Length: 173
Image (cartoon, rainbow, N blue to C red; front, side, top):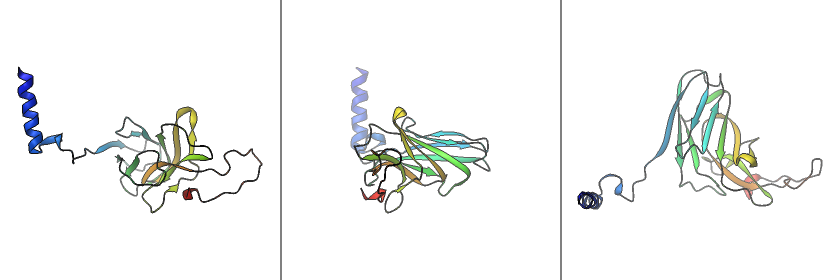
């Protein structure tokens, strides 16, 4: 009895475009974590698929760290949402680690890498690496920007240590 009235009320509000019923309104996925000089961890709103690990001494003062999940980014070979870290331009006194969980593994001859995504082309974070056992890509950051995981050509992926290899621009493929 009561459920029918409630359903009609929700349908009426949806018809008016009130509340979360509108299909053109997307709720933001944002977390804000207050960290200080003692360090800590900030996680994204998508069940913590992105995790920022800040070591002690990386921050000089207390800062509100934000992680916004951007799902509609148009970045070539992007394998995850983009994680926009804030406050914009925040620099660290020591590198911090960004860990992003991924689904699956890279295609043959390719690798997964953490990349800065708020530039014209993705810029791979030097030293980022895919940890297959944990299905994460990890990399050290010295400042905030927007980051995601991209799949890039890996010219040396099937070579043994000491074999010769030709490196190419990782953003070309």
